[in-house]
Image (cartoon, rainbow, N blue to C red):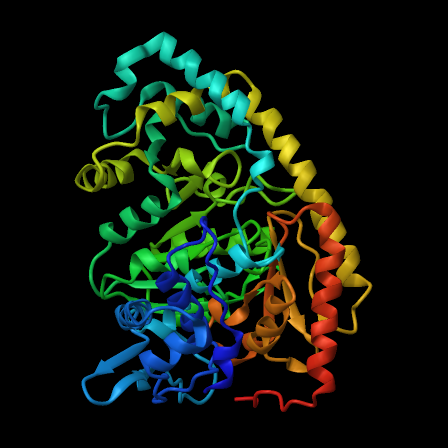
Amino acid sequence: MTIWLNDIKIEKNPGAPPAYEQLAEKMAFIIRSGNIPPGERLPSVRSVSAKLAINRGTVLAAYRRLQEMGLVQMRVGQGTMVREELESGGKGEMTSLSLKAPEGLRTVQSQTWFSRITEIPFSLATPEENLIPEEEISRTIKRVLKKAGRALFAYGPTGGEEGFREAYAAFLKNKGIEVNGNWVLPTSGATQGFDLIAKALFPGDLIFFEEPLYSGTLKPFTLWPFQVETLPVEDDGVNLDHLRKSLAQGKIPRLVVLTPDFQNPTGSVLSLKKREEMVFLSRKHDFLILEDAVFSELAFEPVPPPLISLAPERVIRIDSFSKTLAPGLRLGTIVAHPKILEFLTPLKQASDFQTPLLSQAVMRELILSGFFEKHLETIRSAYRKKRDLLHEALQARSHLFNYAKPKGGFFFWVELQNRMDASELLLLSSSQGVSFAPGTMFSSRPQHRSFIRLSVSRIPPEKIKKGVEILSQACESLSSQSSIPFPQI
């Protein structure tokens, strides 16, 4: 029996996900982390069933799910094999990501099971449930229903409810973004915003993405045959050298996708100098900038002005209320020049026709009443406290962890000592109740195998120190085993 199978445990309590989903998610992580090499045959359905005390149909369903994910091939008479194309085999650093190959996506689906079975889930990037203002949202729902009644359950305009658009535009003006309601298109979360932008581009268009990068940003673009280049992320945002070189060679992108504030996973902030240069280049070479502003309101320290305020005619800004208010509202926005929205609105109509009027009405009232701004101060204070606690805990173990203290958001991007393989560390730490997201979920570059993303969003303050202690002990345990680090490529 393969050793890695000993690390798999299936939850059987009433609230647990289906057993086949748990098994598929856990095996997907183990495959992506390289612990089951390409070409290796997975254990038989019968042996896994006996080892994990689950029925054979559950194992077969899990294997079929892995095949749907593009990770394995099921062959009659030969068993289930890990796909050969997962093997990187390349020399040197990647200069672009393949949008079709599963290994180029580095999806974070495999991190979800850690959140269910670990006590301290540094892997999660969702808001703390205690910070969702349930009572105020409930009161606001009753208030808007009393005003508008059944109208909120009818069809509304694809371009959004006028009151919400104007209220949000006024909110943005206070942030230095000079727009009106005609610049705002409500969306069903930020994900739909990225999806609409992807649909608006032409096959063969050149797009620049950051690397490392959260795969949820990349995923909507994977259905289309675009050319893709990547820009390495540094402490002060993306390195623009590769972009300058491309422009000098006449390779002009259609779009550059950036997260200027508290990038996921690195937590970096794009410097003012780089923001100004990016805007200058976009005007000179006639390309658009997609500004991912999902975390922009979670600033603990002053940051440079939004990109859209520097070049409103060149920047498409995607916002979301999922991190700042409640993910279940499924409300986000695209903020862009009205001529751009004229092109995007029909695409939205073909997607879901409209963003729910109830969500827009609730958000409108929360903004106009001043509650939303007060709520932002509350959550900034709470997340800032967590940021400081994690910083103190990591700083006390600087011989194990290298990182830059983030100025906002949820994330610490941490380099492990001696270029330790983060996937090995995760297998050990998760067995002790602590999970995180390894760097391989965000990048194909070899050096990122020794990085981990720690998110403070769902960790109670009193457990942060304990979580770092467990991580430290796991690091020291692996070091003492004198394991050979992965080679420099």
